[in-house]
Length: 117
Image (cartoon, rainbow, N blue to C red):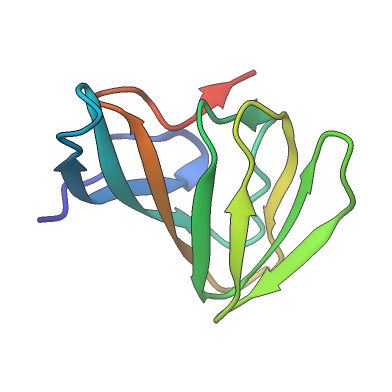
């Protein structure tokens, strides 16, 4: 069941849609997160403690990782969210519509899926 997002800066919304303990990996879980960026949102520098897979539900995103090239994804595209690498750019390309993505992590229970820099 979806949990309402806590107060978050800059209008970004992160909603945990589901968690599932992984019995073979004590203290770890599978976590499904709905990530929503308001129009023209540009995420500050950050990284993630673990890699994730993502899928764009609505809108389009521009992304760039430290040492990597600029990548663009639109609704229907899947992508890999690198772990432990600085995320230089993560931007909603629309000035009018929200960007909605689903992210899937295997992560330690209660560990935040983002590390602000």
